[in-house]
Image (cartoon, rainbow, N blue to C red; front, top):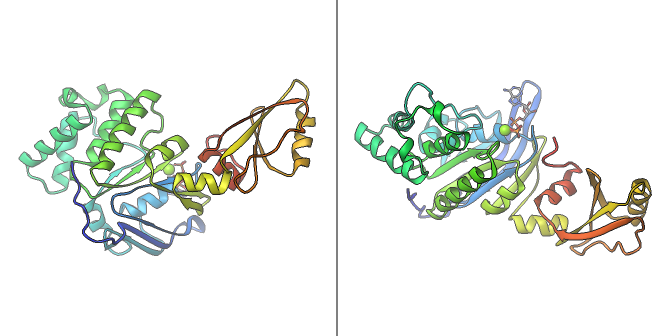
Length: 312
Ligand SMILES: Nc1ncnc2c1ncn2[C@@H]1O[C@H](COP(=O)(O)OP(=O)(O)OP(=O)(O)O)[C@@H](O)[C@H]1O
Ligand SMILES: [Mg+2]
């Protein structure tokens, strides 16, 4: 499962002013970013941010409306077919064939990439082993659990030993233990040198797996950096959580507004971010319990958009 290391430092992906329009609507509004060889690069954003639209252009599956897009040195605006030959794609919807076995789903995919029967079979067995599905190779896809299906979809993208794998929300809808398992496997693959570009709604997933991230909303990039940089720059080290006592919500909200700090409310709890990386001083607040916790990417997103990432 090792990917070839690139000899030079040319970016694996280079997008400049990349745009996707559907009619008059701009799903992706001129975004620029680079993905370096060997890194795991994340796109974090709520529903409709433009993640899938961007990934589909990068996968050679959807025409680029305008701007520049290079994938492993290939101009994706003019050669989407060549792009499809060099990358592995895990789309948001799995597209597995229910009429053939688990293993045949992999070998057929190998044929598409020009592997002969023997080689396709060997690669299929290799990825079945790696993703812990060897014992299910002869089963029908419909007999797999949701987590196994997802692992099979990801496994399939590795049959052709691509240097770049594009994953659109690899763990959405999975239970926590299946999600952990996918994370472990993606972490091992990352150590093998393959470049991964992935989208996610889950800030924990982004923090654990991604070396660098862009945060997208409504077709734009709002911020980019390593998870730590983003957290430090946008949310500070710690945020305060303020839980109003019974009947005190409005009063607490007023006090917080007067404090001048950036606040947001989720459920019955106010989150308060400090300024310039320091934590907010809320010693004067009455009628509420105040506690502090480490800031995370969710706070970054809230700070950038005023919206809750999960709550769309
Ligand atoms: N084929 C299409 N025709 C028209 N509009 C589209 C099409 N595909 C996507 N859009 C619109 O483009 C915007 C971006 O959609 P996209 O699927 O890229 O978002 P996303 O970030 O992947 O969202 P999600 O988290 O829900 O998967 C949305 O407003 C969507 O409705
Ligand atoms: Mg999507």
